[in-house]
Image (cartoon, rainbow over all chains, first blue to last red; front, top):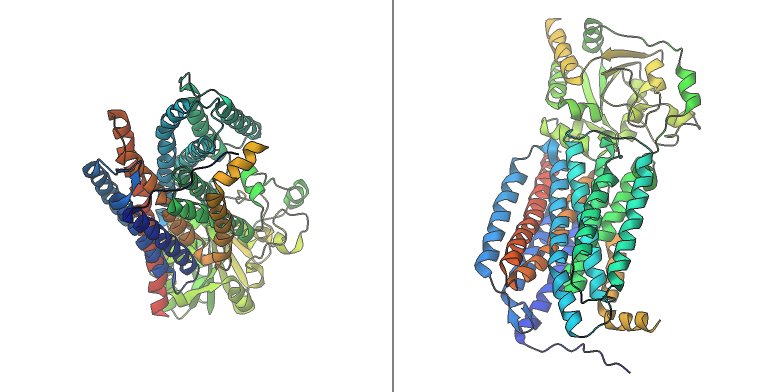
Length: 482
Length: 103
């Protein structure tokens, strides 16, 4: 019978530290809970931040490893100061529209941090296992280190690619062979972890651990690369939960309860959140990752010979100025063109002419839930003007003109009447029920879902081709000249 | 088999916490409205910055120059995650509150 030494030496410091970790965990949980209700969200964020501050402070003050307190404190404080200054300024300065990119970067930093910790702990563990005369690396702590390293590395590399895509620095690669390459990488990662687990602790060439690091980074890149730019928020959410798990691995390694609860909480709630985001788009997570949103052949062929009606700027200006009720349906294109201020200008101009202007917000417009709300809030559009999809649909029949700006799939009638369509069943804004529709679009190109939009061929519809920003600019000028 | 059982006993507390936290994480955010998805993601992002504690521990026991440098880097990265994460989330939620008060 083996006896396992689970006793820790009692000192008041350790007791206080453990208590602070329990308190921090409670603060994380309460913070997350409050973050999921609109009224308490901001406050919840502060609760969680307080928990974090507490855990950091008490770790520096009271943590002991083998009776040794935390050393190098000036260096730690220096690093904390640098991180705080840079993080604070970056987070304050970033434009509201670039928020998802920022979240992605910060997520990547966490992943890199977890990977670094593992890289540094691995040789130490190897040494202590060698001293204790173990015959292989098969040990719970090895597993925690390798998982932390792999998941952290994937999360870091993936987040950087996601950032690049959102910032439009990196394009999409849509090749099916990447899928097989990814499977291969994944398999290689598993094999490497197993090899390291079973290798002898002595014979300390660490080449394998560096190989694992490299492979994790490569996999992170190739994992995110084929996924479409518009799906990045879902990917960031997924990588976010990855980093949570990597943090928990650290918690397992140090037997640290705050890291363990914090990491796992994020891991599980992040996974659920990712699934909820996918659900809001009526897609499965697998579908997003594989990116198999192929256009339906029959739907494409059917739409082939239909005619599209174009409208001139002056006609559009007249139509809008003499309407009673106008509904603006914004989408990803508005965000890309950064045209939210012009959109507001159009709104103000029309309102001054006695037109009632409202906005119809589809829950996943822009493919980031709340994207449009944030974007329009930045342009000072009052909250009361934003209608949720159902409200907008209820008022649709009394609406004179619907202006669709840079949105596509969220106004596609195929979601209602074409069972063969990949987006069939997704709730949409029923723009076609209004008296007139104006669609502002750069070209007849398909939306992210790569399917034809029958709305464009609808008799009520008028196309206004061009970049959302310049078109809105010209339209506003035209209305002013009337 | 014995190894697995031993592993379980050795780490039973951690395993206990992991399993309970898994359920808790799912339960706690299960009723989130879709407009809050992004801020919640961002808030959760800040919380996993708790990995900084690991970085502090590593740094606190670093002896040689290489581990000092890596540890220093790890603490900076972790702090970026924590501070940046919470500040970005706060900014996002500020928007929501402003809109609320106009209501």
